[in-house]
Length: 420
Image 1 (tube, rainbow, N blue to C red):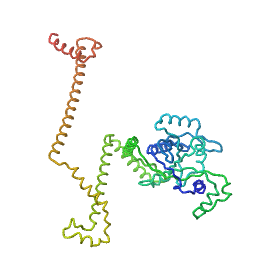
Image 2: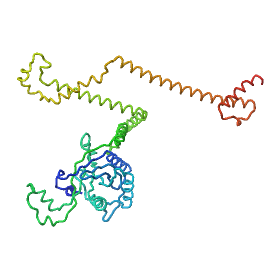
Image 3: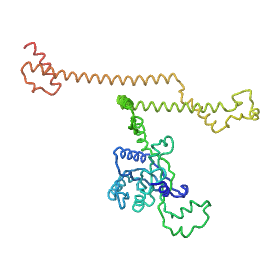
Image 4: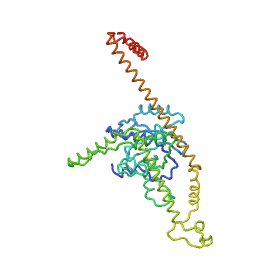
């Protein structure tokens, strides 16, 4: 499909003309990412199509949940939703999410960054006609993900709303450089209306319950092992392939030696190290800012208030931001609150708590050792009673399963042994 056909589906109206506000939740992003990953790994040929559930309050639309959908081929090969399956699944989600009540607010798919394609129009029209007249379209851009342009920047997705406009009117709006005060032609009013898409701004919002899942996924993502995909280029030397495979195997073996507790500890220490580095960077930035300021009569006794007001600041020095200086002063004044007033008492209390924790750990180890010794004594008594009964010709099948009874029989046998 050519770029002209792709760009022809986009409206010439500005996105700021629409009052819709989209609030995107991280759970939707996780569901879409999981669906795309499974689809690629399983090498499915059908397109990636899914539904978006949320709330529609006036001009505010929230995207809170998502699920994948089954598709069928309609007339002339058009991609459509499986009607019966989709209605059942949508009703199931509505039954589960009753408070607050969720509804179908749109759908998602994969598309280039230039905009939706013609193959997306039939399924969007189906949703508009049968489920929601104001459904939005969320497109994920795989090219941006592969190019790595989303690192530290905008998410590789775009949200569109659909509008109906005439083709001639759109061409006239595109070619017209005026402010739009001219009257429309009669031909533009009588021309048929076509479906067009217009980009919408969105913001990412996270609820308190979602923070738990997002934090868990973030920790799991940090522990995941990144395995490079096989190289697409051919004609490489066998020695380089053998070296690469041996390095990957060694990396996997080293990763497999770590327990889940070690992975969690490494992730926690890495996060703390990054936080300390960021704090050090911010402190150095504040220090450099304060150093670059002109001298003040408060810090230098030789400078008076009148002299400081008359002297012009150096050309390379930044402007004095009094609000920033007040914030820095408030931060410095809060630092003594972090340091205990009586350091000796604080150290003694910390040492007492550490001793209590060590004592509890030692008692736990002693209890565990006592339990192990008791289990060992029971097993030894069972084996010893079995040997003694075997020597005296008594059948071993009559042994009692009660450890105390076995211990009693063992003691009786030990008293009877001198008289045998």
